[in-house]
Length: 278
View 1 (tube, rainbow, N blue to C red):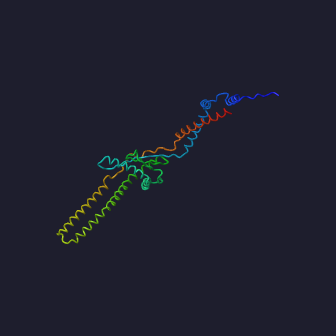
View 2: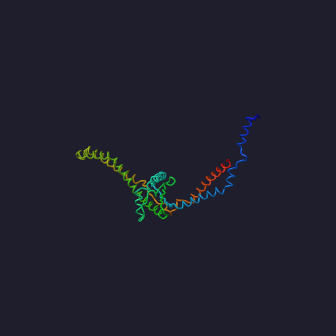
View 3: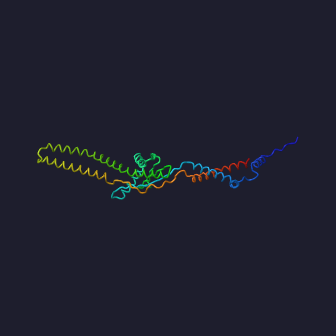
């Protein structure tokens, strides 16, 4: 019986390496894409065209904006500038307030009520400027809304300033109650002191006059503080013609083309590589 010679361990490993080594080098990703570029580009172009067509069917949204400035009077330019900047960021939050929108609706007879979601306001560059923006389904309506809200907002701010000044005067005047009590007690003591020529009566009169003068000075200071630095809002630029902000079919199509190009290219390289290994 003929003996079968068993291969050595070294020979077996060599055969295994040879079996795993492909007979020809696998094609590179670049060569695969060069051969099938028409698939990659054509597929991406098709995705872009579909995206563009779908975007065109979405209802358009138009936007219009105006700018107003917050001004504060005063002698110190640094204080007034800083105060105006701070007030602008606060007032910007009132642009879409219910009273403002209600007043703006009255300026647009025959139009649907302005939804709060269609109005926004924000300070410009942390300065004393406020940008008021309105959106709508048409350019004309967006501009009309922005103009109406801007007018209503300019009229609304003075009422808020008056309300704040009145509140300040009320709270400050309330702090004078101890002085009012002291005046009342002095007046009562003077009334019961007897003849006005007595030293006691004269002393009480002087005290009463001093207290009354002190109260008058305090009231004058409160009134001046309430009026001083009174902020105002002035129109800087009218609401411009509405421009379309969404959708943007061309932009969406370009983004879809680039994304599809990358995805399809990777898919082509992947599946082509799998075919080469099978």
